[in-house]
Image 1: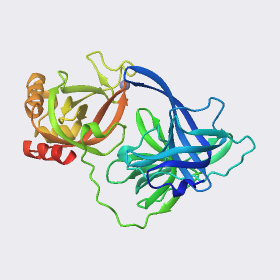
Image 2: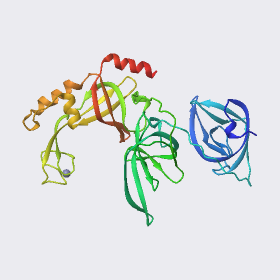
Image 3: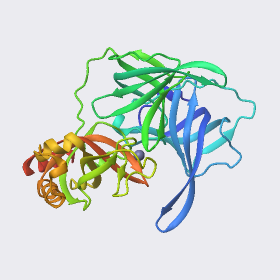
Image 4: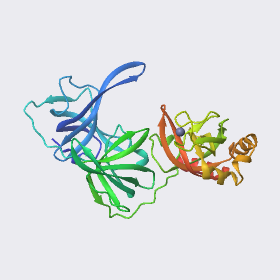
Length: 351
Ligand SMILES: [Zn+2]
């Protein structure tokens, strides 16, 4: 029998006694035929490890202790995991008890996923605020802020445990959640906040579109706007709620003043994928070099100016991602022109 912490190298004959920490079922179609397999997490007193089982007894449940004989350890996506194959044996230990040592993998913020919910993230905490709230009749201080590790930024919520502004910290065992189409991290009772002492590693927030599949914040992409939306240009907004209005005014605030602004949306292509982006206000005015009065501007001319300034012009955009109707979009908070050369360079580096 080997302990989980000692499984570091690929091997074809692994025997372990472990607790089934999590167990999921999935379908796989290989060579045209569908089959069911299981995957999840095994744990013992020394740590946890992921596993995949091509044959697994249906009587085994989450929380059970099992002896796994003749399994293999393989490297998959840079991480070692256990494979339970047709030659392996899974024996249920009905009387077994085991304290599992929880280990949390270190993740870059851009790679966070709700399907891998308990992780360690190391970055700088910013934008801390707090308010009193009540949970099940008990008063709790809810701390909110952001953590940025250089690859991206996410919101953090902490119930009761204070967050320190500007601290470079490791959040061990934070939980990845998604709310309103954006990812965030929750600091709970099982989470440790440790001051991070190791020197900061330079990481890039310039990513390729295909690399980032989660709605994180403060990420950059370089690409080409291939389609500028036809309603880009002068827009009117309700001064009460900030939503777009038409000629009739805001449905909820018919008496509110209408405010004019500039807004645009486009599809950004970088050769690895595409993403819809939108930007407005001063960020857009600055990019267009527009400093006139919107009230006296010609809407058609302004629309043409937006199209001419963006369409097929290589740009780098930085902003926050969110998922709406299953598609990813970015609220751009900074945009600048770059050269074609810079785009192809980044595509090469991404390979
Ligand atoms: Zn309104």
